[in-house]
Image (cartoon, rainbow, N blue to C red; front, side):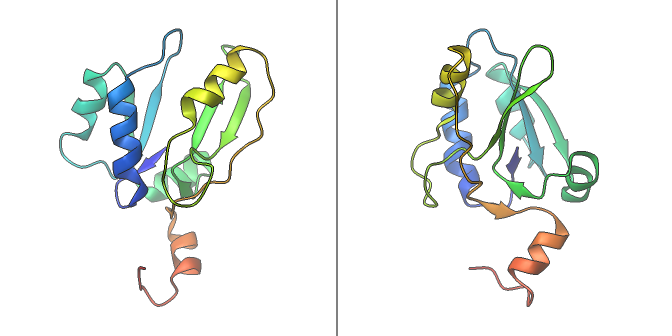
Length: 133
């Protein structure tokens, strides 16, 4: 899941669009508040795309922060739910490493979700006066 209003979005979006869909994987991009042209960019690289509001993401999926990587088995069993990055400063997305380890039936420890509050509840908790850092 990616959030349009998060600084991490640019680096992650660039990374995903540069690599395109992984072989033998069906990849969906869940995007909060997608801007004009975003869906077309991802679909051109083979991704399936779904845009929701932050309230819909929280209500339907219980997701309150982004960017978040979710990997499911072909049987719809959650194999990985966590972050894309090993440290708070966006450096290099770990999605291909995580997917590769899972394809080899190796264990993967979930990375923290370093990014931005998406849900109104988390936004209020992280910036009670409406200030953004």
